[in-house]
Image 1 (cartoon, one colour):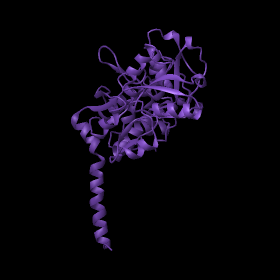
Image 2 (cartoon, helix red, strand yellow):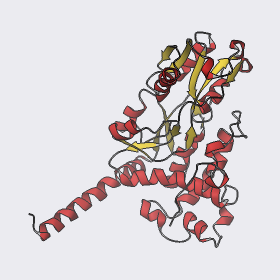
Image 3 (cartoon, one colour):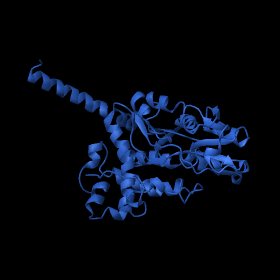
Length: 338
């Protein structure tokens, strides 16, 4: 048995080592001067650059908020477009600092890839899109259908499970990218196209004649989508996690881009702690105490981001649904800054 002195000395050494490791990603990002964000690059509403290379989307806003919290500048982000196949490898290798790319949180991904999911920034579920001319009103009428799907995704597995559970025959037509799968469906190579329901709303806008297609009512899976970081850096995990919580908490407290300067004068203890006028909660993360003020000022709260990217202020017109605040019947709920 080690002596008490030896154990204390060892604990001290391990503590210093853990502290150094915990700051590794934040220090790397600060030294580099830019955040490398793994993104989709092809999905309207979540991650898509325009002709001028300007990125927009719900996940894009998240990375901008993270950059704002660190640098007080939402533009200090390099968006790295990643396919479903290479997204995890890019994060594991250090090519990106965070993956914010409509990625489903599953047990195997959380335990076998050396990665941590930091939370859920969009609660989704898988659906189907078909041509109106097919005269199909339910996914249960798709027996023996050819379905276009992106390979290497939870979508592919859910598709097979759904047809098997309902004793239907399936002709799976797989593609390496969602863009290829959508083009094949648009060209008539498949009877249906399947992906997350949010993705269907965005992908439908890219079809040759969008009004010729409908999204069927069934949601066949749970798809909790959220940012991902590497194992082994708890401080970075905390920062990425709390950026999302700050956006959700700001919406609940009624703090917006437009009023955050006035809210700094608030006497509400919850507002004071979130915006950094009381306590040292930013320092505990390795950031400045006004970290949340910065990201709200530059990007806005969760509701503002949702509405302009996928909600009623966007072409997708998606209802808040499960992504409404918990106070309004949804699942978005942030722990308190305290």
